[in-house]
Structures are given as structure tokens and as C-alpha cells.
Length: 454
Image (cartoon, rainbow, N blue to C red; front, top):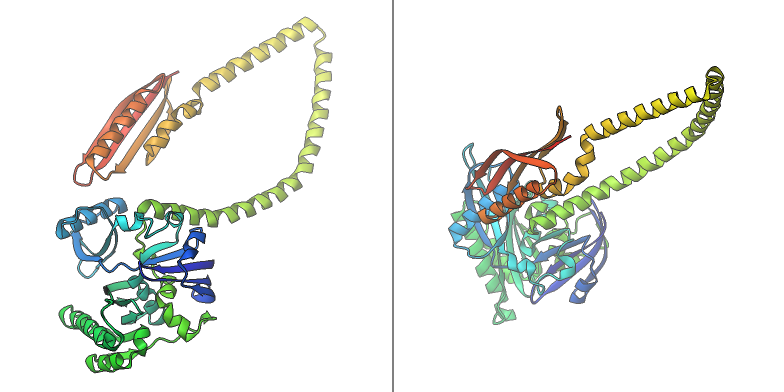
């Protein structure tokens, strides 16, 4: 993966670490708490974790669907109905297999307003379309818990001078999370009590009301240094309380730096399941990563092909020279047989006439001659299948289009534009072979047949 930057930001706090990361191995390059670094980042290789305490968490149930876009639409609609949301939200979700059946799917859903992502005060314009992941700082604790104890249910407590975060997770699954700002009226002498009261409340909710039994309690940040709080916590819980050490695969990271920048390190190991980036950004990132893998292979193939062609070039030139010699010899022998120049010209004229007639007929019946005219329609329709075929005296294009839309208005506009473009093709007739509209999921399935007479 190489050199990357992990940033944790909130209105009152900023942390960033620059590391060289390869798998689970990590080498620290530098740390900073200067927010000015944001303007210098290009996007690629940047991990962003935002502190946003007003997170919406809900369990939703929807019918089983395979299409990912449709699934997300249904989840958002169900979430809006349950919580009464009036604005668009970005969501991440994870299926709960133990509660799902063949007739229903149950998901744990986390949601934040999309305005949070689009607000330039939250996320600078230079980072919006190319960051590696956009998540929440409290989720970052899961990345570190998973790295340290992949098979255990971990109750992870982190605090710094401005906030307290608690995240319960097992492996990649975030089971519960809660985060709060530390109010300005909480002074140093009251901080231990504030931490204990809030952690106590969270632990009781998780362990007693939700029936989630942690395997261990982790303390990171400066929570580990609050002796009175740690003592009270040990008396409260039944599980072992531990302070994580710097993982062996980390180099150049002291214990002090590790605990100060814990969420930054954790984000680097967080599953992309918890990426709140809009779908368009995720698709762009996916395409970029595919190209990053494919381009080196293409370059290698080109070099190998170039070597092969260079080796073949001499053989081809030798054959060409030999064929030219045979051709000249054949011409001399042919002219020797046909001594009547006029007759020779007539034969030659007939040959070229037959050749041009055959070439014209071939061009006329080649369906790909019309491909250029049809490209704009195909690009707009983005069909799941299309095919050219040659009829007795016509060329035929068949299109199968399947699309899901955010609302019915957009669906109808797309269908209208599709038929207008088909109708506008000169020389082509078109026919709607089949059409189906699913009003529940706002999905359209339509088959078109375009024909041009030869």
C-alpha cells in the first residue's frame, strides 16, 4: 500500500499520522496536530475518520434482494420510517445472520446526514472524491481491537482531552458504540467521576440490557492514566481490564504516541464495510484500484509482445521478400501466356469489377458498419445485454436494459429519453419488445429492437 495518511478530525480536535503500511506491518513517518495539512493532501492514500457523536443506530428488516443499490434504497427508506428522518443520510450496514431468514434480511444500520460529508468545513473539497475511506472516529477503535484480539468481543474505551468513545466489537463486527464530548464545565478534579459515570452507564446497557458479554475491557488514550477511574472500573466489571501495548508489527511508534493517536492507527485496519463515502465515490475508488492492478499487467504484456514481435519481424520481412519475388515471377509467366493486350485488360477489368461488387455487398451486409451510429444510444442505456445480428435483408440491434432509480420521476424521465433517442436514429425503426416496472423498488426492465433495412 505504501505511504498513507490517517486523519482524525472534529470541530475542536485534529490528529494525523503518516505511515508506510504493508499488510499489518506499519512504520511511522511522522505525526501532526496541525490542521493545515488537510490542504496539502491529494486524496489517494488518505484515511479520514470524523468524530460525530449524533450517530443514528437501528436494526431494520427488509425483504431479501440481490441488487446492492436496491438493498440500500430499501434500508434507507425503512430507516427513515422508523426514525422519522426528513433528509438524505449516508449509511453503512451489516447483516445479522442469526436473525435473518429466507423471507427476511435483518441489518444493523449506522447512519449520518449526507450534509456532514458535503460540508466543506467537515471535509475539504480536495479530499471528497479520492480518499481511501471516510468513517467515524469511534469506529476506528474496532480496527485496533480486531488487530489485537481478532477472536474476542472487546469493550474498547478511549478518551482524550475533548471526548470519550466506547466501542464494542468482535472481529470486523461493531456491536455497539457510544461517544460523547467532554463538556467544558468538567474540570480536572471531576474528570474521573465523569468517565466512570458514562462508562458505567454504557457497560450496564451492553452487558445487562443487551446481553452482550465482553471477553475483555481495553483502555487506550489518557483513560488508562486516570488511576481513580481505572480502580473504579475494575471494581465494576467482571472481565479483565487491559491496556494495549504497541503491536510488534509497528515500528517507530512509542507507547505515548500509540495511545495519543490510537484512532488514527485503528482506522488503517478498519473494514471498508464501515466506509460512509457516497456510492459514486466508492465505485470510482474501485475502478481506480482495478486499473492500478491491471495497468502493470498490460505493460508487462506489451513488453513481452514487443519482444515477440521483434523476433517475428525478420521472419515476416523474409517471407514478404520471397512472396514479392514469386509475384513478379507469376506476372511474367501470366503475361507470357496472354499475348493479346486487349484480352488481358478485359480480364483485368472483370476481376476488379467483381471484386468491387463483392466488397460493396460485404460492406452493405456488415452489421458493425452501423455501430458508430448506435454508440450514443448504447452508452446512455448501459444495457445488461446487447447484440447485433444480420437478417435476410436487414441489420438488427437488440437491447436489454435493467436499471434501479432513486424515485419514479427519474425512472420515467430515463424511459422517455431512451425511446426518444431510439426514435431519433435515422434509417432505423424501433420496437419495445417487453417492459416491466417495479414500483416498490423503482426498477425498470425494458427490451428494445432496432432494425435498419439494407
